Length: 473
Ligand code: ARG
Image 1 (cartoon, rainbow, N blue to C red):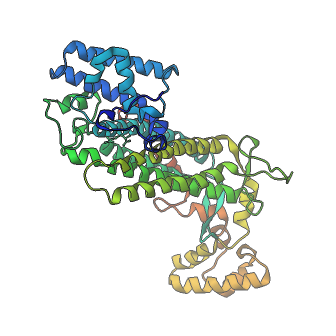
Image 2: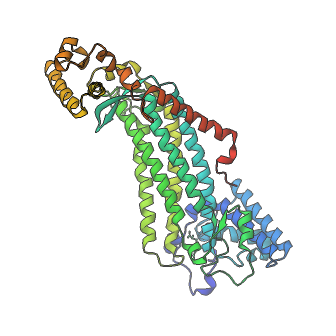
């Protein structure tokens, strides 16, 4: 227990226990331990390579570090608060294992460039995993879309019935959002994948280090050009949190729709028992807890983004301890995004059953084909605004008479405008209303089929050429 702090020689008295707890990050930055070890091994190898330590010493350091990794994996290494943070914990344990040579590990390095390296290695891995999870999510969206091209669902604007759409088209909108999420993370990855290692505390080092050497071992694409920027930059983390927030916003929007759709009022989907929960008091209830939690957790991730932006805004160069606060924001966002992507993927794969009869009835019982009546006239030479006004009046009369457009007789249509013919009935039938929107990117079945095929090809192409996926180590 009560071991001395690494820096205690400089101090007259020990740290107040409450302050030690306040200062420590070991409780959460232990999550970085394997990346810390990997970074330290690269540093040790570089020290050997440049002759700063002997080749034998470098091997001893690397071997000792690998042993710590094993101990950690076996649950035998559980450093306490007295270690302060994961970096001190590993260094201290290393010295216990390899003796005094362990004290050479930190030559030409600071915890400032060390922690920056650790977070970047961590985020690289996590970005890779989150992108995989996005692909899974896209996969189930696509499976659902493929089997529902001909299924119609009311399309809304202002949450008012607007025009019917193919259910596949609706689902593919989320596929496209997820595609941007996937691409955005790939873009962020480029800024994560830059090595700060060798920047020292802030100013570089007096030792003849080789930063390219460590960067190469750690498979960093580039190295930071400025040591002060390197140790204090968290732009990449902000970008990551922004991307994570956007992913969550997308999942939250879909969640909101599932929640609405599963309500008695909509009744567009039924929740299957494997993904729904009951109430403690109302025996009839089946609650959409999964999408509700996803919607709720979106607040945390967006909050973490905000926290990190505010954290950074007043920081003078270079490292400041405030930066220790970046970790929980990053870790929690990573955990939350992964958990939500997984839950939503399961929900879509096996937790929902679309009530097709209810959907067909929904699109047949409203005025969401009114635009098509206006388009019908416009296509026959009536200026659109004139046609629009005429249909507005027809809708008003129909509502007063308790009728739908399809209930008007041909005589009634003709009395409204001589251009109406028998084919008006065909033009306003829901399947035709959807099929007719065959403009690129529209809900016409032809367009939707093409979009679905293109999406399937995108996913297949990636499976057959792994290089398109950004891989980590
Ligand atoms: N635990 C610290 C952090 O997470 C490590 C870096 C500490 N550096 C320092 N100069 N105190 O930021």
